[in-house]
Image 1 (tube, rainbow, N blue to C red):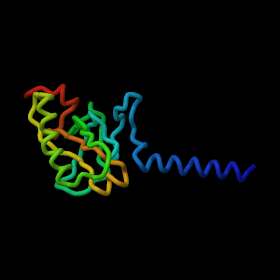
Image 2 (cartoon, rainbow, N blue to C red):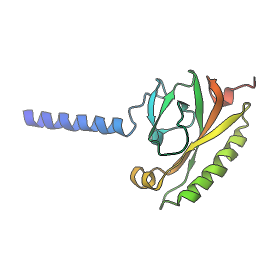
Image 3 (cartoon, rainbow, N blue to C red):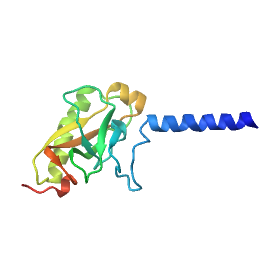
Length: 155
């Protein structure tokens, strides 16, 4: 009986650890909005996630600091482009879809403020090992703001 309880407890602890490791531990409310500032897996980003401390330059990134949108932030995920399934289409195809798709979707939003663009896109490794088949398009503000992109006013 004691052995069975220990095994069940060990399985539960391992399950929680895996859940937190793969990004299930970010602090979101019932509607999916981030409640507390902290690290979020780039594989778990959602539309309207507000971000701080964007990485400089290029390179592989697995997590990023996110914050509730009513707190100052420098960027926001404004859309996710689903690349579908199948084999990895290649860096050129993925980069091309990001280069064309993110600006096109931003234009459709007609933001009232000027923003730069940033994105997270899958690598062949993340495509195969993490089932990462999407591009996260991110609007980057000139200076920190509060609120969502759709609510920003020209100053």
